[in-house]
Length: 122
Image (cartoon, rainbow, N blue to C red; front, top):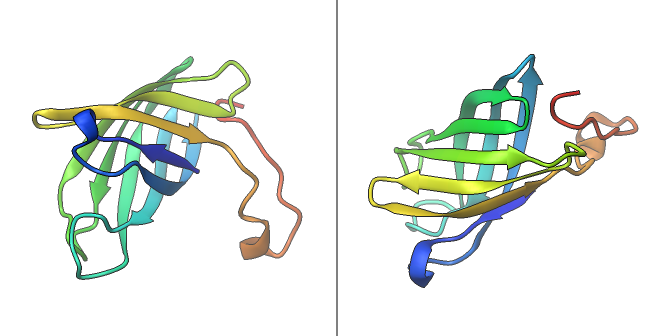
């Protein structure tokens, strides 16, 4: 769960839900967020791919193009010492802004079993 903000209040602070898998520093996953840029759907979906080296995080969020977005956004951040949060900056062309992500055990309902929280990098 997280959010990203636009520079100089050019857009709303946007919440998102991310699922990230860390395989020995290779990151992969997906992100769902409200559609704040168009009217063709209520939400936007994207795919995430990147890397983690120690606490340094670098990934690209690529929108799936099924809605109002078909571009990619770069994210660079730092993983907290406990592995439960990532904070950093996103960038796209001449725009950039802060983002933050917090790890939660939210997949319990989807799997039907007890969820556990496993920090990134564990």
